[in-house]
Amino acid sequence: MITNDDGIFAKGIMRLAEAAKAFGEVWVIAPESQRSAASHTVTFHKSFDVWKVDYPVDGVHAYACDGTPADCVRIGVLNIMPGKPDVILSGINNGYNVANDLQYSATVGAAFEAVFQIIPAIAFSEADKENHEVTDLYLKQIMEEYIDKPLRAGCIWNVNFPDCTAAECRGILYDRTVSVDEFYKDTYNEVAVNGERKSYMVEGHRNWNAKEDSDLWAILNGYVSVGSVRNIS
Image (cartoon, rainbow, N blue to C red; front, side, top):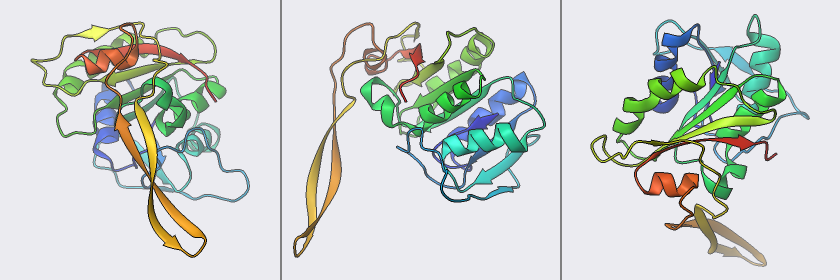
């Protein structure tokens, strides 16, 4: 089963679904639209809708959901699929999921919901750019290596592809730790004032420094980062 947080018709999830067809039957159950930064949020106090969609990737079962990515995993496993999936893939996210920012990621949140359902999970992310050379070069190789690879209880595999060309990529670094640094250092800008009420908008400032054994250092230095992440919910 495949989900994401960028929406069911995002390019990343369609590329992941196409690649996953080489490994078995594929079910795509994903949000109807953008749900980034929803973390592991689930819907308990209201209903949400799920409906079958015509999908651009041939040969897959596809359902859209107006809930969160974690909702997609729950409803997919508990109601839609005829049996539990062998693995849940989340992504390919448009933007990295590394360092302390992982706690906000709905891509990672969906993968951890898979862990709650006792299903192995892999989260995939890449730079929010149009260059997918490195992802396309290594995606199937990493899937083949990790789709059946055992995990410690409460963990997922987390994969990030760097923002460079295939020629510039320096290879894959395995067993990366989650950087304790922030990927973005945030500030809030005042954008409007209405009496005593003020509106603020977040502005993220990229952090370009990290320890060498970390996921953040890997992608900043042109490596694919692969590592396990313990449940942070």
